[in-house]
Length: 160
Image (tube, one colour):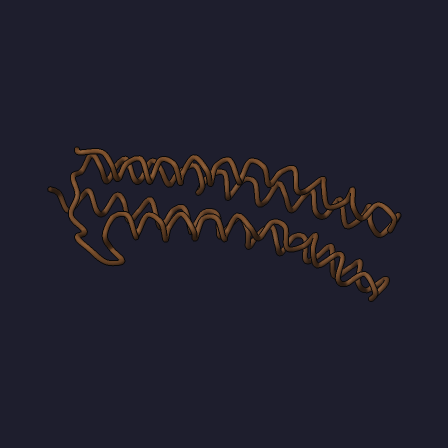
């Protein structure tokens, strides 16, 4: 057993939450700026542009979920927090997809949300299409979430 193993696992959990959270904070802020402009022109648009603003916020939630799952699996939130260096490095690596894809996809999703807010303001009847465009970016955040979850649970069964 190595105290470095738990340190690497904790670093992975922290990075998943931190990077995805940073991406979401940037993304929601970018979309919020566009939403504020849209609402200034027409206050009745608030509900619909709020939906478009919130879309880039999901990556931060996914990163937090990965951090919680990791902390639970490594024994920090109950149980024994002892593990080998190899296992700790595996947990670290398992958290990286959500961290990096969460950071990048939230920012890219915000750009799509900003464009969709502009589209909706010019043609309100396109709201359904305006949601689909940034939602397509969400697909990759969900794939990163899935691979991180599968990896984390897979590591728990390894005897290394």
